[in-house]
Length: 94
Image (cartoon, rainbow, N blue to C red):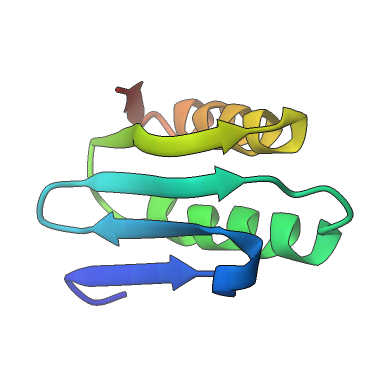
């Protein structure tokens, strides 16, 4: 993963997720609406695992530009926090 890694789904799905290695921030924007998007759900979780397995002692989740979050979106964020905590990272949300 380089200094700034981006995971962006098709704009028609309406969201993007960006990770900045220097600031250790994962930024969400748009509408994280994953109804019938099981493949996207698993792709995001795999990408989160890459972030968690890096060295930062903490990771900040910035959801300030998130317009909508359904139950699967909440589940993705919860899984990330649990996985990060299990790896002794310190996830924070803002």
